[in-house]
Length: 192
Image (cartoon, rainbow, N blue to C red; front, side, top):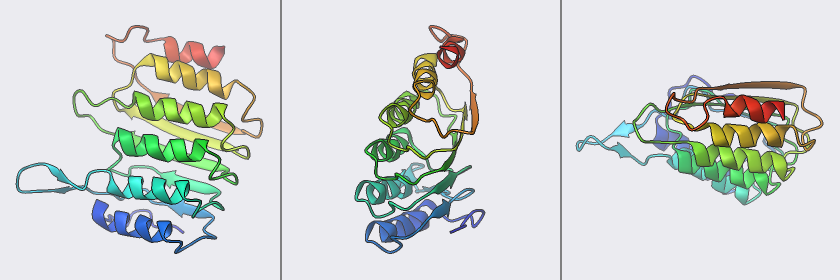
């Protein structure tokens, strides 16, 4: 199901993901929500329903409602907070998407003090636990979020663990700030 580029607001995407959680598309194999998830900003300047769509998708995955999913794309999905992304990856780590072959996620959040370390740690756990044994293509873009090198290093070691033996294509983008304890750490993890 290709819904990319529809410029859905986060609440619309959440309603769609809730329908998935209710079993609305149990045989869904491909889902592309790229270029969606526009957050609504309330009168007080705060985002309404932040992360609701991805949390609802995580709930659908966790409930086994999209167990046939083989391709997931969330490129330029604008409402991707750390805790919701972490929940999604944790649900996948539990083996709820055993047919997943392709995952593409591009995170974009340049707010100061918002780190995505836990989301990357959850993805590393998904790889280490063998939650996606059929994965062939991984494209993760963490360049536009605040992330430390330690989670990237952990992800690199997980990718080299042999648990993703079907992997054919890997594309990782990230940037660790100069004040990171070990800005080269992510590359070291990949090399190990």
